[in-house]
Image (cartoon, rainbow, N blue to C red; front, side, top):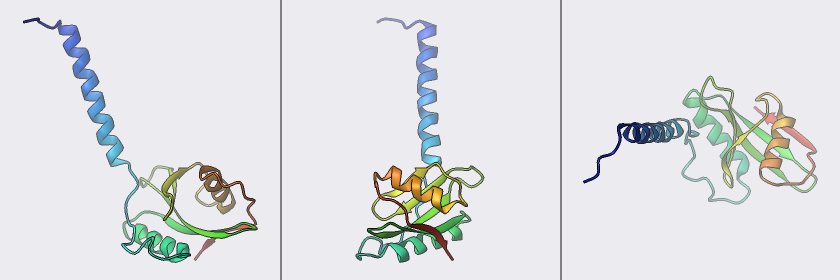
Length: 133
């Protein structure tokens, strides 16, 4: 039977400890789930789905808004939220893409729309982007 040197045991223990921490931190910072059970069942239902998602997130204390985007070809609605609370991490949710992390300011609808179009590989030009009350 071969004995392992103490240095190797310490290195392996540290690697395993770091790996476990990464897994737990990753699970703790995943976007929350407030998706309605009817999401995705109806065509052209992006606006009510985004509104339901925003309402569910706000009920959990998470800042959320509904963003309406229009291009010359189509329009779409998204739920925009920051998570985890207190961290300046912006997310966009829709039924097709689920939660996508974006780099934009929470109060800038044009910047969020451009970031979402870029993240989803849509080359269209934005004609308007606004938050819906």
